[in-house]
Image (cartoon, rainbow, N blue to C red; front, side, top):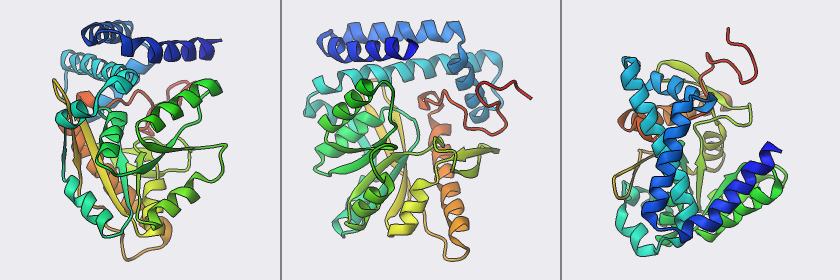
Length: 299
């Protein structure tokens, strides 16, 4: 029942929000963010626990202010995502600035595949729309949501922005398709700061053990594609992104050790971007291994 109600709200938002004046939509989602922040639900508590790793010297007042800004940033992501179909290309191009994008184009122009790995920062859907507007087709993966109607709406939304979307499960081998795209010199974009398959790599993240997706490193190693982490954040009237330096593939060690080393370098780049813009890291889930597993009592 709860899933059906949530799905109905998402579908309603996609229908209604593009028709609202933008100032109304902004005010509405800021209000929703503040209400959620004041209620101190599980997601907000998890966000604060994660942010405390980023700013370990923060006192209670600063942490609460940061988590409030984080919830407003998170709700801005959703507001913009629902309204993206109404944004014209000139607005997206004019208000999006990407540092080091030339390094991506140079590799693609040379016929080499590129895998951009992103954390849950800023607005990754909007960034994907910007990439498509540059004339660069790319492939991504989406988690299969329930109910199916909601999953299909997410896929249709992202395909309308110019992305090729593969299901994480239930649709054949996503990894095989991604590998083919990369070997053909294509672009793949994956959100990778959370291990949703329980088969990720353990990394040191802000000084603590965390589990992150190992797929980007494995695909880069398998195909010879360039693995390039990305950080994203909001500005008052637009968006920013930075493409970090390519993660080199180690020459020594077995496959597992090389994947682990590359995943650690990816995590280091994520940490650099998050530390610079902690309010735009939308991590309301568990990634640090010291935290209790949802549904289990804390140690």
